[in-house]
Length: 123
Image 1 (cartoon, rainbow, N blue to C red):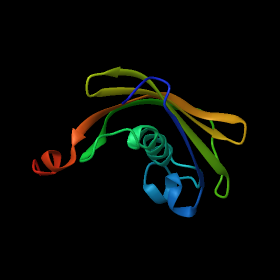
Image 2: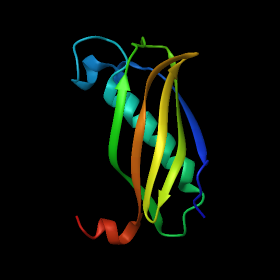
Image 3: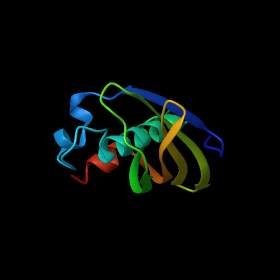
Image 4: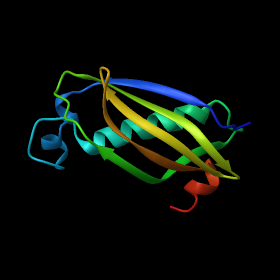
């Protein structure tokens, strides 16, 4: 059963492939916003994964974030997600990312619970 308060934290060391330069989202070797967003999405997905029924998964639908501080390659970035609202299949998360104890980004993320096979049949 999905209920408010479910949380998950994930950590990642920033590698060369995670930079804005490598991802094409900028021209500097700093942690890219798309990489931060992906880490936040991963934390949200994992926060509820163990509570889903067999054959179900979640898919990302909406992300609203700020990316307020840079992080260098080699830094260990942490992303946290907390489920703050459940409306039938719609799940809303509060997400945040940190470089050490400094917040580098925050926002909200919406995911939907879907039947895996039915979803893939739409491809």
